[in-house]
Amino acid sequence: MTFMLLTCQNNRQFNPFDSEFIRIYRAKPLHNLNLFFFGFNNENDLQHLHTLTNEHGYFFNAFVDYI
Image 1 (cartoon, rainbow, N blue to C red):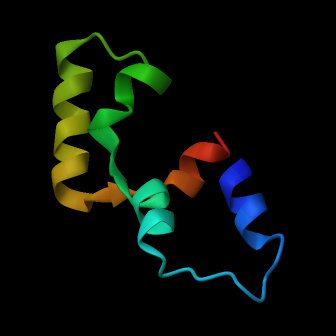
Image 2: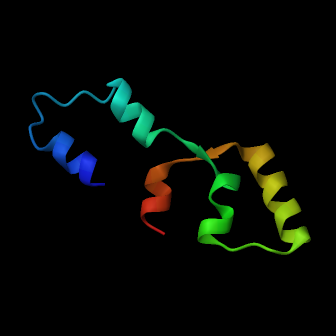
């Protein structure tokens, strides 16, 4: 979030399509975050998570920032 604040500090130069900005804040698959945030260790939970990820795709970093 610090990068976002620094980037927005001078909003006349802010470019949301800047490649570095997109690289840092791009969408990430939920399964990359499951162990870190949720600690799933049950095989049924992991299978359910995998199914949700396949059906619904990606979650944005902004969602993760507010958990």
